[in-house]
Image (cartoon, rainbow, N blue to C red; front, side):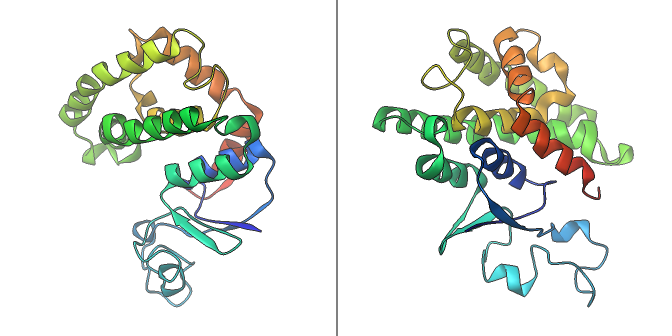
Length: 218
């Protein structure tokens, strides 16, 4: 039985979306980020990323983690690559070349996109207005122009990243790029990226995950 540790309002959303795409049955342990709680040490606090019970699962104190029949893994994109290999069918790699491409795109998303897209999320949406810095958001938008152009070129031929079909690579990368959607100007010169995001977000499994996310406390 697959167990996913983490709330929807976290990077666990990536793994929950993939699980829905594959029709996987799973148990969700709703571990919350400790910083979201007014008093994580309160006796009645829900399980969170600094709870001793969760630190036994992931001593890093981050979500998501999974336990898949005794195999414990951390890091959302790595988790998704594993699940797609094991259960994913057409979502996973057809051969070692596709496996390499899927791994490449996951590392690319973490190194080239997420450091900037997360700043757009923070400084355009997530933080209180008084804590937002427009200069940081502007710098992140500028920094994303080159990697988004690379992504646009990769998507231009088939509309997908690997194998001419929707795969775990599209889930992983689109979830990182989604953080930048608060700055639509990022995609002004990237029509293939914009169309790809729209197609990813039109999928029933994504909509299911987002509806579940919206039902969670903010």
